[in-house]
Length: 114
Length: 112
Image 1 (cartoon, each protein chain N blue to C red):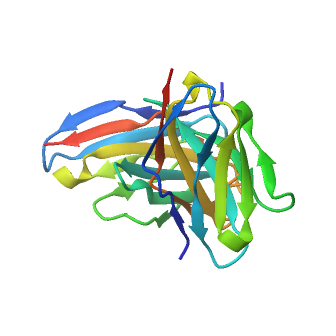
Image 2 (image 1 turned 120 degrees about the horizontal axis):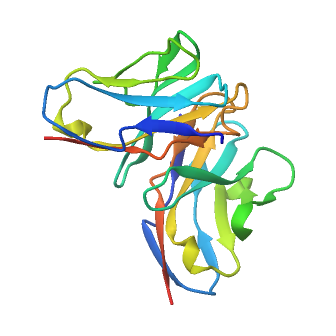
């Protein structure tokens, strides 16, 4: 089954403790992206990647890192999480160049930073 | 810069009634427009999209949307809603490449 898998689904952590949210897709998609969803703000793009070793900032990249060493994986790294990063995070992938046409989303990761 | 406005935060509709969710966009060229639906605890699913051609587009689950360039709008409609349509709906505008901007969403509640 074609899917985007995020782990964990729920995560509670404390300020300053490094964490990684994993994202994997099994569709051989070139494009992958991370979004955060906050009430009243909709989805905002954090980082995206158009292929292996190619990443770029979205609208809200501060406090986040990503890497794209393999085509299928696109982990989101919070080196020193802060409470304002408490949010619902979504990973998405798409074939290139149909990025906007066939965007597949994961089920989300609810992160709480205390 | 592209942007999307969904003026209604929350809409309540009776089951069987018609539905219209509003979306206004700002984009310099011909936009790529989308509607996504998010059911509770789920990721987003594409309902429909508009790139060019016929301004009335049909999507899944009986939804349709009409692109009106003069009004910069792309409203979502459904003639008769079902309880299973309760969800959050997001309008989005794209530049045809990697940039996709979402609206803030409209939460739809269905009452019996």
